[in-house]
Length: 530
Image 1: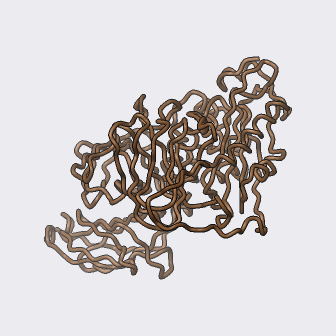
Image 2 (image 1 turned 90 degrees about the horizontal axis):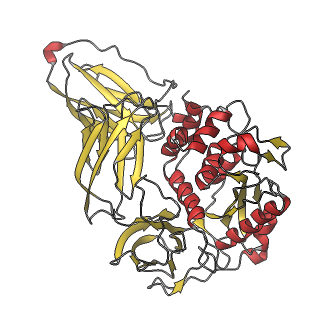
Image 3 (image 1 turned 135 degrees about the vertical axis):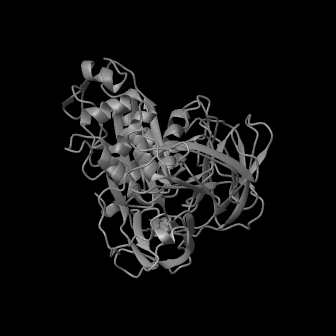
């Protein structure tokens, strides 16, 4: 029995449990289950809140008792899950373009509709990260072990194992892939949700719903990646079980709000976490609250947060060198705070460089905005460089890229390597606007005029917070009313080109002259576009 990549599996294996020959590439178990449970008395024991002083209790549920899990392969999946939740649009592009052999082969084998894949991810709202929980891991490990013993791929007793492990959940989802080549292959298989449907993706996208927290608040995760290379079984090389859950948060040792992250170093400079790049044994300590944490074998950590506040988190020990701190604001939801060793920016300001292209690899002229500074990636096309950008209090930068005919690219960055950005076309979208017929007045070229208006959702009165760009001048319509007003120069035709961009909406461009200076712009949602 050979167990290597999907490519090799094509020629030498047989898949038990599904009655399917591996003359086809394996895929995650279809129709992953979801469960919602009513509360019981045992789940609603009030949780005592301690004073917001310096933490005194180590939170140990983010790792196994022996500190060996999540190991590097399991933490790689956690890192990929939380990266995907932070920027779904970028995740869709990455899944469609990743060149890893097994991932690319499976995409081609199933005939995944790449444009549909990217469009679906672009319509997903960002979600908070998931915190690793050892009880969910123990249940996942038992399930993977059982699948190996039965040489199978199914969800039998998956949820009962979660309850038996002592995790009280309000809602849960479970993913299973008994034939993963490695962690990257498992993540891509789940999130693309590849299968034998006409678009190459499984009906319902249940695995994706779990990872992206689409139909629930799946704030906790426990996953096990178990190596199985025996010639006596067809499953393997990795038997992966993922348990996602929302906890009954008023029970003892059950939370849904965390500071979550990974302490790691990008050793191979590929821009993502790989097994072996984590730093174990690092102390992660907020300046207030109840809990601190020590990173697991894979470098991951999670710290429950009881009170919304701004926290100074200090990283020390575990081979990272001098202790270092980061500020992070925590509201009602979990937040992601990765610590990338050796590449953290100096406090206060950072430099940001990158390249922007379309799906065909053609450089694009775009507007790039970060920390109140902007430039156009037009000289030469595709390249941008912004220097001395002030960071937010949590050490992040919000990067926004806008271009006519493309969906906005908006991402919150907490590390600052070279940015390679691929823009997704906006497609064919409903038009909720009336169109003025601008005149041509070359004698007015260069004159400055005042323009104003509102940005609205579709044909409603709901305001939209958007960036409005007109003849080189810009502002945001984020005052609560959707209003904008700009003083702009007329172009060579005596006209104004107004461009309106908002994350989650199709871009819109309006051309008008000095005799029609007040305009309401109505935006269609990305999800309406074809």
